[in-house]
Image 1 (cartoon, rainbow, N blue to C red):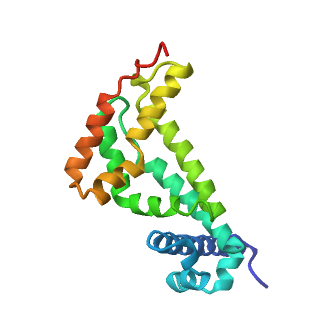
Image 2: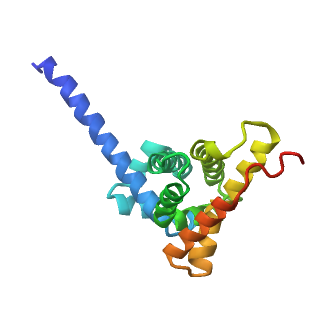
Image 3: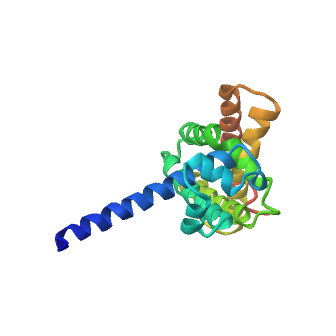
Length: 200
C-alpha cells in the first residue's frame, strides 16, 4: 500500500519540475526572439532550444501567442527589478537605464518594430511604456510639478530624453561609445526645465 505521507512530496516535486520546464521554455523563447523576428521563430525552434517537445510547449502555454504573453510578463518583471535607482540622482538614474538598454535595448527595438503585426508584442510594448512612465514619475519626483498639464509636459520631456530609441540613435546609428552616449543622455535630462510651460 502506498504511503500517504509521500504524496505531498511527489506533488511538490512534480510542480517544481513543471515550473523548471516552463522556465526553460520561456528562456529559450526570450533568447531566440531577442535575435530574430517573431514570425521567423517557430515552436520547433523554441522546443529544440529548450530541449522539450512542441507538444510540451502547447501544454504549458497553449501555443506561440500564449508563450509570447508569458515572455512579455517575465521581461516586464525583470525590467522593474533591474531599474532600482536613487530618486533625484540624474547620473545614477541614467547609469541604471543604460545598463538595462545595453543588455536588452536591441531586443526591445526589434520587438517594438513588430507591434503592428504581433498583438502580444503590441500589448507588451504598451505595458513597457506605462511601466517606464511610472518609473520616471518615481525617480524624477523631485523634478516634476505636482500635477496637471505642467506635470504631463515634464513627464513627456523626460520620457523622450530616456527612450530606448534615443539610446539606439546614439549607440547603434551614430556609433557613440557608451561613455559618450551616457553623458549625452545625462546632459539632455539635466537640461530639462520642468517649470517651462507652466503658463502655457
